[in-house]
Amino acid sequence: MRSYIFYLFLALLLAASQTALAAGCPPPYAGLIQNGAYAVADLQGNIVEGCNLDTPYIPASILKVPTALAALSVLGPDYRFKTRFYTDAEDSLYIQGFGDPMLIPEEIRSIFNALKLRGLRQVRNIYIDASQFALEHQSPGSEFSDNPYDAPVGPTAVNFNSVPVRMTREGLVFSGEPNTPFLPLMTEAAQGLSAGSRRINICRGNCNADREMARYAAQLFRALQEEAGIPGQGQLALKPTPPTARLIYEHRSSKNLQELTSSFLKFSSNYISNLVYLAVGAEKFGWPATWGKANQAVRQELERQLGAKTAADIAHRDGSGLCRTNRVTARAMLEVLRAFRPHAWLLRKHGGVPGKSGTMSGVYNYAGYLDDGRAYVILLNQWGNKRGQVLELLRNGGVPKRAAAAHKPAVHAKRPAKASAGKRAVISRQSKKKPKRK
Image (cartoon, rainbow, N blue to C red; front, top):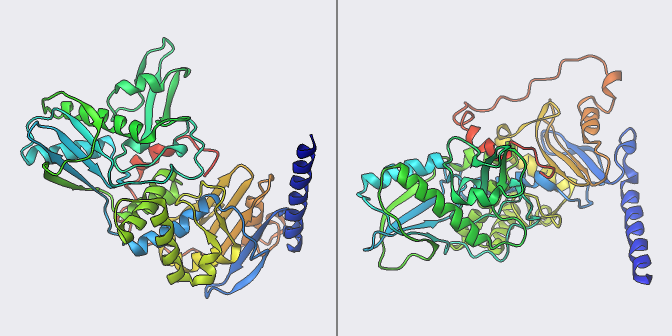
């Protein structure tokens, strides 16, 4: 009882101190920001207004912007993930992945076409080689729920590591989408579900993520092997590629990093952004990929672009922002937006202007560019979601919209030619159901 009272007192004390931190916000923002910050910088990067600029807050998915900034520099916009395919004397197929987030059925069909052109005539055993990842733990911040945004990441992972299933009223289970064939594991994934279609995280609760990812990948490759008319049956297992196996094909993803970045920013995909984050570390320090290498590589790149002091105010534990121990200050986020300005066209619109949202329980953030091109950030770590009202004030010079003089906002800078803007439909499937945390 005594310890309960102590922790209750501590929680109340922390809540009071957090409220005090936001006391410096000027009106009319003070009535909207109980625990948080806001800031605006001009086109040269000079801060023109704001409050609590140097207080660290949970960023949620706006952390995907510094992830994208580091990845586009370290890997380059034309970077493509690879997957290697080996065979042995027993007609086994070894699949060695390097974290390609786009191993979806459409991509795997093109892989089998390429394998047939390279002489593949039969596949008996299918082995998933997970040796290029050595993760210390699964995605930081994941709650291992049914939701696709909690899906694990791995070197050979298919279909966003979420299973599309459709349950009929009669209890029959089918694939939940036309491009994905029915797989045995769909019956397990649908247990306990009501009628309807949905996507289910393959690793719910206390599961072995490597084993479940390998099982899903092997079953999908087997089904599409049969669809491609390639005969053969055998084991489906997790197994490293032996030195005696022969490399017959190295596949490069059909989407480059710039396209992937646009997708994980616009659709807030934790799965894609974490795989990109891990690739930054592995390409800089060598495979296998680890969270430690990714953390170090991204920190070094942000120090190079933003300076050591600013980079120190960005606590990166993952690439998606899902982890609640991530932190960022408003001042540091404005520096990120200054450096990210050439890539601003990759963002979608929130509240009428290009930006990135960040949403978790008790976290409501925005970061982006106002109508006149000035960078802005809103960090609200509080129960009341007032970010839309704060953004409205920023767009109207601190005056509520109903009291602002009618005016036509300036046109935001146009983005470059739409080389890849139309290629997002497949990736958006992961986010058909809006998650509560982004």
